[in-house]
Structure formats: structure tokens, C-alpha cells
Image 1: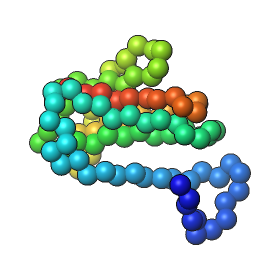
Image 2: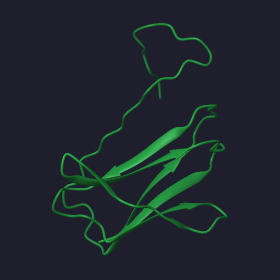
Image 3: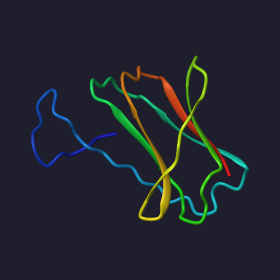
Image 4: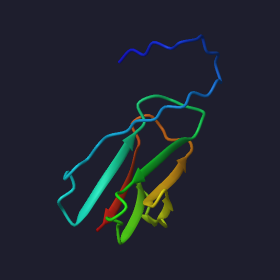
Length: 103
């Protein structure tokens, strides 16, 4: 993948990337997940956020790191929509973190 940036950046500069995907009728099961895999080394934290429709809040949400027990996340609301957000530091290349929820 090649990215063309509008300006030159220096080592240590933080860039903010936002990836949004529309998922209309894409989660038909009672248990669903969204995952993030580190493809490159980064000294900065990654932020993983999952936002649900205002009328479809999950009943239980947890985050899972490889080799560690799952940890429950509390949902919050912004603009009437439930969401969870987790700051992830030191994610090694190839490591996957997963947010799982039950409707």
C-alpha cells in the first residue's frame, strides 16, 4: 500500500488515521468481533474504537489480547450512539487485538 502525504514528516511525528467502514446488516449473529493487527512497528499508541447504531447497543463488550484473558469494556455514548474506545500501546508486529460483543 502506498500513501501520498501532503507534506513531509519527520521521525517521531504522529499521524492520525481514521478508517471507517459501513456495516449495514453485516452483523447478523448474536456474538460479533472487530480486530486490529499491527502490520508495522510504532512507538505511538493505536486507538481502536467501535461505534454501534443508536438503537443497537451491545449487552456485553470485551477486549482480547493474544495470551491474556479477556477484559470487559464499558460502553459510552456520543451523539446518542454507543461506543467503546481503547488505547493500545506497544502492539508487536503481527499481534492481533480483538473487540468482541454480544447483542
